[in-house]
Length: 353
Image 1 (cartoon, rainbow, N blue to C red):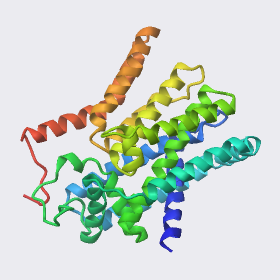
Image 2 (image 1 turned 135 degrees about the vertical axis):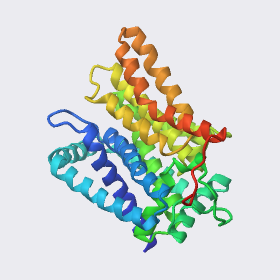
Image 3 (image 1 turned 30 degrees about the horizontal axis):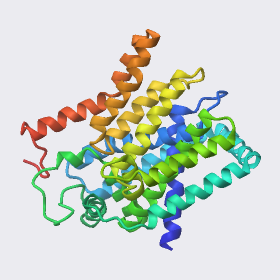
Image 4 (image 1 turned 180 degrees about the vertical axis):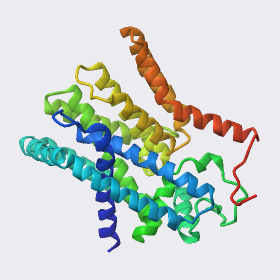
């Protein structure tokens, strides 16, 4: 029963990401990518969740209230998305089915590798302190019906919110899902979210491989080599290490989804067929990433400037650099907020004063 429920939650994740992402990536009568839409929707989902969560958390309201608000909001977004984008979805599903049938051996190989990688990360043992923190934090929030008020390791009440984690509301969403579905925290984090991340990463690898190679044999070879690199290049604090051993953690998402999708947007920008609203998507990705892990505050601005600044100078288009800098404002703001907290300028308490 738990396995069946976990599979349903996994499928619901991608439906919701598609619903959220369609508002940014789907345009009528214009070709669009399902992988790009789902990935942008992933970050839009968590960006909006943070906007809803922080006021509830800072006013000391229970987790159950947040769950009700978020459930109503998600249903509303899903209904609106179906009404507005139902026809483009149906056309895209038919296109995907045709592509799978026409290139069935390619997709058979991709699905085989993806399933094996997903099962591997879902069943392997996680032994890091951060892994324990994620699961314990979700469990503590659910059991106390509060949001980040109690220390997940000791159960002790915390005098103030730990700013290193408080704005990274990604794990709070797991708490909400667990409370609504009654799914155990370990299953939600270690199985559902690990599987979600691995499937999304593989989808991005396929997208990039097919971008560089029209020949599907070469595209599949590139895809396989990318996976082999991730399996073999495991040392301390590499993106590969987080992907294969700490898949559901925020740093894993930043290193293996955020950085890759920003690179994909850059590839689309330098091509002749970049989608409309590319920088809006980039802003959504940057904002969503800032709510997943504080690591984003350093690595995302670095990547965005490293990619888009040289291109803006080469093309003599300063507006590209201006747009890119606007996109990383969430990370810069979060960095300033955290530095001010560390320096002792303020604290956000877990009770009214």
